[in-house]
Length: 306
Figure 1 (cartoon, one colour):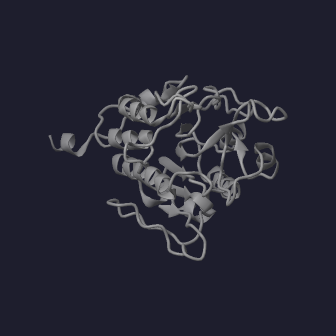
Figure 2 (cartoon, rainbow, N blue to C red):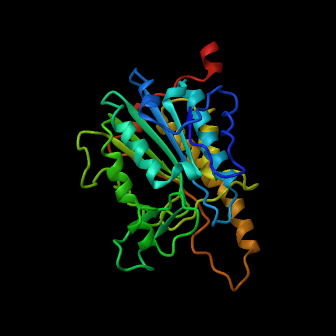
């Protein structure tokens, strides 16, 4: 698996190998040759995790969330190292994302399926900054919090959700599945991929969001992993059928697990405090072409033995 390393005086070591799957980490960032190793048409899974230093959560939460999901996809789909790509923190800047998407565009073809799991903080610009188009802004890596959303977009530090969709539509993969595990889902258009101006009309695409409109995406009770990431990985390891069945089980698990977490959050909240988002969490799926139901996941090892 290609891994972007954290930089800095005390973080010169490579990211550790994902546990249990023996994926080798490369020292250099993603490059076209790294993608070119994958010569057979197959699934390509891209994981993006960003926990910026100016937010309250530990950087390890994003690392754990993305690595856990990629490990689960790798084991269930029997993916090789060349079919897994991980971008973390400084390695998930807007610049790095553009280079990665360009490499994918130069490598993938109509027989390939691109699956993206992105654990990225996001913000709505609807109320705060009237000069920007209404919508969701993905907060890619920044060493310091930008002064404003408008400035972050102008400088290319952050990108809007539609701009991200436009980038994905430069990749000629036959199918695209985007799983957005964001901290703010209220303005993500369910038709983000399907009706985008640069949409590839003939390509089926599916969008999964980790929370519904107006809801927050919770962490697990021990706050070590994103709640949806935890249940998506668990479902990949235990659910038979199609990818639609896997997502459905992950959504149900997330919804149930969010209930006591939400109760605990409300108990800690004083009467004078108000939550910006509803801590109830119900993941949503927008799959107009029904592609998730056509993707059969390999039988679990126990079933193969029988």
